Image (cartoon, rainbow, N blue to C red; front, side, top):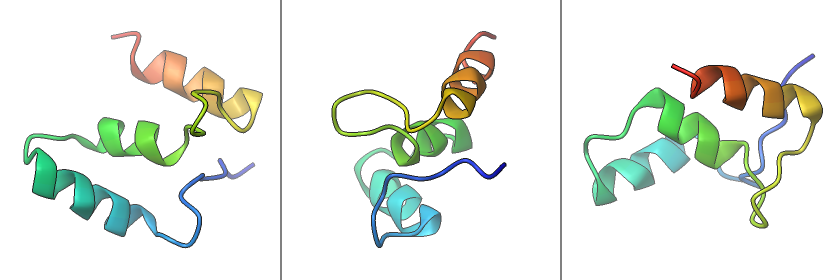
Length: 58
């Protein structure tokens, strides 16, 4: 299953590029989190929530 993004018409590259303009030290993990989190702070699916927990557990 593909993890749905929540960026609307923006693509992942465009979101990451806008983030890099503000803070050039962002990582792929940071851009994944922004692109897959709703504005209210929830995740679209349980699969995305699991990935985020595994990603930031380190």
